[in-house]
Structure formats: C-alpha cells, structure tokens
Length: 211
Figure (cartoon, rainbow, N blue to C red):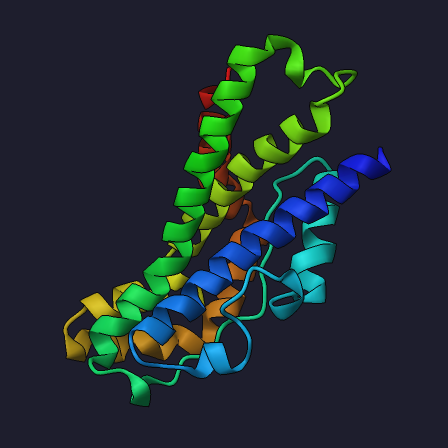
C-alpha cells in the first residue's frame, strides 16, 4: 500500500469530518447555543474534532481492506436550553452536518470535472497531479457517503434527530426510547451487511459521475 495514498485518505477523512462537525457547531451557535463555539468546535482544524478510532483507524482500515471509507468524529454537544425552539432548531442543527457534506461533494465534483476536461489522463497513477485527483475523488465519495450514512434514522446519527424533531410529540417520545440501543443497531447493520447494501449503490452512482 502506497504511504502517500494512505496520507491522502487520512487528509480527506479529517477534512470531511471537520466540515461536518463544524457545520453542526456553527449552526447551533447561530441558533443561540454557544456550547460548540466555547469548546472551539467552530473550526475546520481537525484537531478540534478528531476521534482516534473513528477519524483515523476505521477509515484507514476500510481503505486498506478495499471496503468503504467512512468514519466519525467527536459529536458537537448541544444545550437545548439555549435554543429558542429546541424541537425545530435541533432539526436544523442535525441537518447542517449532512448538508455541509453535500456542498463539499458538489465542490469536489466540479473540480474533478474541470480537471478531467483539462487533463483526461489525470486519473492515471503515474500523472504528476494524480495525488490531487485522488484527494478530490475520495473527497467526493466520502462526503456523499457521510451525508447518506448520517441521514439514516438510527441514533445517534443526524437522521435520528431530524426524524425525532419532525414527529408529533407522543411519537417522538416513543421513538427516543430506542436511543440507548442505537449503537447496537448500527453494529447490527454493519455486521449483517445491510449497511453495505445501503452504501454500495451510492458508491457506484458517485463513481459514475466522474466517468
């Protein structure tokens, strides 16, 4: 395995996760909760967001083993007491993470399209600008995967907070009872192969965008 490729993967993961978490922190701050800002989370500096397991080990293992590249960072804490409308505002805060990844993916896609027009052979490993191509290519893939993965309505993913905020109060209370078991549900999805069945079509679709 080329160590340069591993460094590029790590850089893409840290950058993409930093975009995601800083979007949560910035949106919460904009809506009245300064908790994330006080903790230094309104920044693209990966050191503020890094989780050793989810931000480094898991994505690198995924790349080395030829599987999907994904990961997670430290969640941004939100204090609902600072929010004017906690139920509504939590939807916006949760949605900000996946939305930021969609914007980043579109930016990477535009750069890749321009690069392909200027130098069609750029995707060849021996091209001088191949590392830049790989960074943008993996950035596109990872940001789309992060957006889709985090929109799954399984706690503690962003999709669970969005769904909880959209449900009527009595249904939201019932739904939130599964929150303590969310991580086990995610593990079940991963080890059963169901998560791969969800992500694989997205992965293939995104790869087709740059052909």
